[in-house]
Image 1 (cartoon, helix red, strand yellow):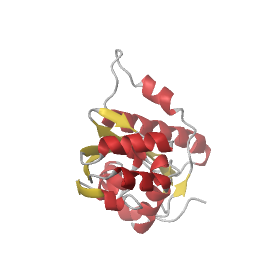
Image 2 (cartoon, rainbow, N blue to C red; image 1 turned 120 degrees about the vertical axis):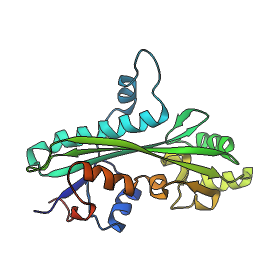
Image 3 (cartoon, rainbow, N blue to C red; image 1 turned 120 degrees about the horizontal axis):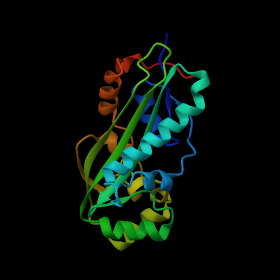
Length: 213
Protein backbone atom coordinates (compact mmCIF):
# COMPACT_ATOMS: atom_id res chain seq x y z
CA UNK A 1 0.00 0.00 0.00
CA UNK A 2 1.39 3.45 -0.90
CA UNK A 3 2.50 5.67 1.96
CA UNK A 4 0.94 9.12 1.85
CA UNK A 5 2.60 12.23 3.24
CA UNK A 6 0.53 15.18 4.42
CA UNK A 7 2.45 18.43 4.77
CA UNK A 8 1.09 20.58 7.60
CA UNK A 9 2.34 23.78 5.97
CA UNK A 10 1.11 26.11 3.27
CA UNK A 11 4.65 26.91 2.14
CA UNK A 12 4.95 26.38 -1.63
CA UNK A 13 8.73 26.11 -1.25
CA UNK A 14 8.41 23.12 1.08
CA UNK A 15 5.96 21.34 -1.19
CA UNK A 16 8.19 22.04 -4.20
CA UNK A 17 11.21 20.61 -2.40
CA UNK A 18 9.30 17.39 -1.78
CA UNK A 19 7.99 17.31 -5.34
CA UNK A 20 11.48 17.67 -6.80
CA UNK A 21 12.59 14.79 -4.58
CA UNK A 22 9.79 12.63 -6.00
CA UNK A 23 7.14 13.07 -3.29
CA UNK A 24 3.74 14.54 -4.16
CA UNK A 25 2.56 15.51 -0.70
CA UNK A 26 -0.92 16.69 0.15
CA UNK A 27 -1.16 20.01 1.97
CA UNK A 28 -3.37 20.68 4.98
CA UNK A 29 -2.67 24.01 6.69
CA UNK A 30 -3.08 24.07 10.47
CA UNK A 31 -4.87 26.77 12.42
CA UNK A 32 -2.40 26.74 15.29
CA UNK A 33 -2.10 29.84 17.47
CA UNK A 34 1.67 30.25 17.23
CA UNK A 35 2.00 32.71 20.09
CA UNK A 36 0.08 30.40 22.41
CA UNK A 37 2.18 27.41 21.32
CA UNK A 38 5.42 29.25 22.11
CA UNK A 39 4.03 30.52 25.42
CA UNK A 40 3.21 26.95 26.45
CA UNK A 41 6.85 26.01 25.85
CA UNK A 42 8.14 28.44 28.44
CA UNK A 43 9.46 26.58 31.45
CA UNK A 44 9.95 28.43 34.72
CA UNK A 45 9.53 31.75 32.93
CA UNK A 46 12.51 31.11 30.64
CA UNK A 47 12.15 31.75 26.92
CA UNK A 48 12.78 28.75 24.65
CA UNK A 49 15.79 28.97 22.35
CA UNK A 50 15.22 29.83 18.67
CA UNK A 51 15.81 26.18 17.75
CA UNK A 52 13.31 25.07 20.38
CA UNK A 53 10.74 27.56 19.06
CA UNK A 54 11.04 26.09 15.55
CA UNK A 55 10.48 22.57 16.89
CA UNK A 56 7.59 23.58 19.17
CA UNK A 57 5.77 25.19 16.26
CA UNK A 58 6.46 22.28 13.92
CA UNK A 59 5.07 19.88 16.51
CA UNK A 60 1.97 21.98 17.15
CA UNK A 61 1.19 22.17 13.43
CA UNK A 62 1.76 18.46 12.77
CA UNK A 63 -0.30 17.31 15.73
CA UNK A 64 -3.14 19.71 14.94
CA UNK A 65 -3.42 18.45 11.37
CA UNK A 66 -2.99 14.80 12.40
CA UNK A 67 -5.85 15.19 14.86
CA UNK A 68 -8.13 16.67 12.20
CA UNK A 69 -7.38 13.81 9.80
CA UNK A 70 -7.47 10.92 12.25
CA UNK A 71 -10.81 9.58 10.96
CA UNK A 72 -9.05 9.00 7.62
CA UNK A 73 -5.83 7.65 9.08
CA UNK A 74 -3.27 5.88 6.93
CA UNK A 75 -0.73 8.55 6.30
CA UNK A 76 2.18 10.47 7.73
CA UNK A 77 1.88 14.09 8.77
CA UNK A 78 4.92 16.37 8.62
CA UNK A 79 4.96 19.75 10.33
CA UNK A 80 7.77 22.25 9.71
CA UNK A 81 8.55 25.73 10.95
CA UNK A 82 11.56 27.96 10.40
CA UNK A 83 13.06 30.83 12.38
CA UNK A 84 16.25 32.82 11.92
CA UNK A 85 18.52 33.21 14.93
CA UNK A 86 20.52 36.42 15.11
CA UNK A 87 22.18 37.62 18.32
CA UNK A 88 20.33 34.90 20.23
CA UNK A 89 16.89 36.12 19.14
CA UNK A 90 14.38 34.32 16.93
CA UNK A 91 12.98 36.06 13.86
CA UNK A 92 10.06 34.78 11.84
CA UNK A 93 8.14 36.51 9.04
CA UNK A 94 8.43 40.31 9.26
CA UNK A 95 4.98 40.93 7.79
CA UNK A 96 5.55 44.59 6.90
CA UNK A 97 7.96 46.45 4.63
CA UNK A 98 9.15 48.58 7.54
CA UNK A 99 10.07 45.57 9.65
CA UNK A 100 11.66 43.74 6.71
CA UNK A 101 13.84 46.79 6.04
CA UNK A 102 14.84 46.98 9.69
CA UNK A 103 15.69 43.27 9.71
CA UNK A 104 17.92 43.52 6.63
CA UNK A 105 19.75 46.53 8.00
CA UNK A 106 20.56 44.42 11.03
CA UNK A 107 21.51 41.30 9.04
CA UNK A 108 23.62 42.72 6.21
CA UNK A 109 27.27 41.73 6.30
CA UNK A 110 26.60 39.32 9.14
CA UNK A 111 25.75 35.66 9.70
CA UNK A 112 22.70 34.04 11.25
CA UNK A 113 21.44 30.52 11.83
CA UNK A 114 18.28 29.28 10.12
CA UNK A 115 16.55 26.69 12.30
CA UNK A 116 13.82 24.48 10.86
CA UNK A 117 11.85 22.27 13.19
CA UNK A 118 10.50 18.99 11.76
CA UNK A 119 7.80 16.90 13.45
CA UNK A 120 6.55 13.63 11.94
CA UNK A 121 3.37 11.87 13.08
CA UNK A 122 2.95 8.26 11.92
CA UNK A 123 -0.77 7.57 11.49
CA UNK A 124 -0.45 4.59 9.18
CA UNK A 125 -2.84 1.75 9.97
CA UNK A 126 0.09 -0.68 10.04
CA UNK A 127 2.69 1.81 11.21
CA UNK A 128 4.42 2.58 14.46
CA UNK A 129 1.89 5.27 15.48
CA UNK A 130 4.89 7.09 16.81
CA UNK A 131 6.01 10.70 16.70
CA UNK A 132 9.55 11.84 15.99
CA UNK A 133 11.05 15.27 15.63
CA UNK A 134 14.28 17.19 15.32
CA UNK A 135 15.63 20.59 14.30
CA UNK A 136 18.04 21.21 11.44
CA UNK A 137 20.26 24.29 11.64
CA UNK A 138 22.19 25.98 8.83
CA UNK A 139 24.45 29.02 9.04
CA UNK A 140 23.63 31.74 6.52
CA UNK A 141 26.11 34.47 5.54
CA UNK A 142 24.36 37.62 4.35
CA UNK A 143 25.85 40.03 1.83
CA UNK A 144 26.62 43.58 2.91
CA UNK A 145 23.74 45.23 1.07
CA UNK A 146 23.40 48.95 0.49
CA UNK A 147 20.28 50.79 1.63
CA UNK A 148 19.23 50.98 -2.02
CA UNK A 149 19.56 47.21 -2.47
CA UNK A 150 17.55 46.58 0.66
CA UNK A 151 14.81 48.95 -0.48
CA UNK A 152 14.64 47.31 -3.90
CA UNK A 153 14.43 43.81 -2.42
CA UNK A 154 11.80 44.77 0.13
CA UNK A 155 9.78 46.44 -2.64
CA UNK A 156 9.38 43.05 -4.34
CA UNK A 157 7.30 41.92 -1.37
CA UNK A 158 9.13 38.61 -1.14
CA UNK A 159 10.85 39.09 2.24
CA UNK A 160 7.65 40.08 4.04
CA UNK A 161 6.16 36.58 4.17
CA UNK A 162 9.21 34.36 4.74
CA UNK A 163 11.10 33.45 7.90
CA UNK A 164 14.11 35.68 8.41
CA UNK A 165 13.00 38.03 5.59
CA UNK A 166 14.96 36.22 2.88
CA UNK A 167 14.85 33.29 0.48
CA UNK A 168 17.59 31.14 -0.96
CA UNK A 169 15.52 29.92 -3.90
CA UNK A 170 14.02 33.24 -4.99
CA UNK A 171 14.86 36.92 -5.34
CA UNK A 172 16.90 36.83 -2.14
CA UNK A 173 19.49 34.42 -3.56
CA UNK A 174 21.93 37.14 -4.79
CA UNK A 175 22.06 38.53 -1.27
CA UNK A 176 23.24 35.30 0.37
CA UNK A 177 27.03 35.01 0.15
CA UNK A 178 27.22 31.44 1.47
CA UNK A 179 25.55 28.77 3.58
CA UNK A 180 27.18 26.26 5.91
CA UNK A 181 25.12 23.11 6.13
CA UNK A 182 22.07 21.76 4.34
CA UNK A 183 20.73 24.27 1.77
CA UNK A 184 17.32 22.55 1.58
CA UNK A 185 16.90 23.39 5.26
CA UNK A 186 17.24 27.10 4.43
CA UNK A 187 14.49 26.72 1.83
CA UNK A 188 12.26 25.32 4.56
CA UNK A 189 12.59 21.54 4.83
CA UNK A 190 15.72 19.47 5.36
CA UNK A 191 15.46 16.49 3.05
CA UNK A 192 18.34 14.63 4.74
CA UNK A 193 16.72 15.12 8.15
CA UNK A 194 13.37 13.93 6.80
CA UNK A 195 15.09 10.77 5.58
CA UNK A 196 16.43 10.12 9.09
CA UNK A 197 13.03 10.74 10.70
CA UNK A 198 11.38 8.34 8.27
CA UNK A 199 13.95 5.69 9.15
CA UNK A 200 12.95 6.07 12.81
CA UNK A 201 9.39 4.99 11.96
CA UNK A 202 10.59 2.17 9.71
CA UNK A 203 10.31 3.78 6.29
CA UNK A 204 12.63 4.51 3.41
CA UNK A 205 12.44 7.90 1.69
CA UNK A 206 11.47 6.29 -1.62
CA UNK A 207 8.38 4.69 -0.06
CA UNK A 208 6.56 8.03 0.06
CA UNK A 209 4.58 8.13 -3.15
CA UNK A 210 1.23 9.29 -4.52
CA UNK A 211 -1.01 12.04 -3.28
CA UNK A 212 -3.58 11.49 -0.54
CA UNK A 213 -7.04 11.12 -2.06
